[in-house]
Image 1: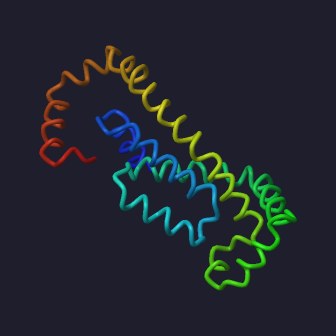
Image 2 (image 1 turned 120 degrees about the vertical axis):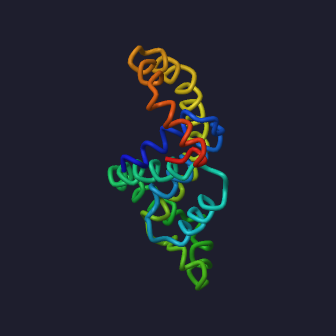
Image 3 (image 1 turned 60 degrees about the vertical axis):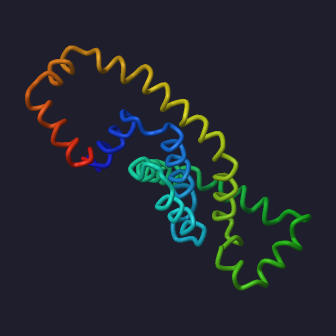
Length: 174
């Protein structure tokens, strides 16, 4: 877990696009909020592995939102039950339930339905919030941290210079 956090910090401090990190946080949020063993999560995992996003950010976001999901499961249950019991949608739910492929999505479970709808509604705001947090971190926190005297001392040592040279030869991975 420490290595994962180190990779995330490296991505936050690197020239990685803030949008790539923000999308990693969104996909991790979606995977963390919804039930893990669901068909739609295979699609989310496929997207996370095929798009150029930071996988460490994806995993940290997944872990964070998995914990949050346990706290707000009652909200997901209520939201899912409300949607599944809506009179206007009864024909849709019956039609989907008769389809074997649609049943694999487990839409008829209240927590699955509620968490997917919640994640879809929260995805766009979280994308912009995480983007602005990343930009603010790079603009303020990283600059403040780099000005600290002990950081300047560490960066001036031969060990750090050698580490940078070696990590640059290896492609910069931790």
